[in-house]
Image (cartoon, rainbow, N blue to C red):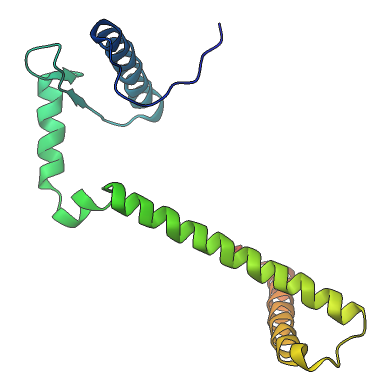
Length: 162
């Protein structure tokens, strides 16, 4: 059976909202159980809802307490290392998009310089500085490649860095 597209907004019908909550909670807990079994990690969940009194805990209260105490024992830096609010998430997405744009612009510029060089239009004054920079980059790349070849010939392991 196919699924329809879900719009992420509050479900107005209370009965439908309760059923959706129950099904999604079940799916979430199932995935959490699979993660703990397949990946051999310890995890817990605390779920508060308007439909039940008090929080629902998974797998059990004792395990949740153990994991929360273990978490609280960590230094604050490690506790908050991967925590993000909406603003942090958007900033990270913007930074990633800027990096991708920069990379694409550099690639585009390199292609443009390659076309200019292949058409023997190198004497154009607008591009002479860019061509010198491009030649420096090519020289550095050639040097790195030669060093890698020497390392392979000597039997050393090679790490790919990008």
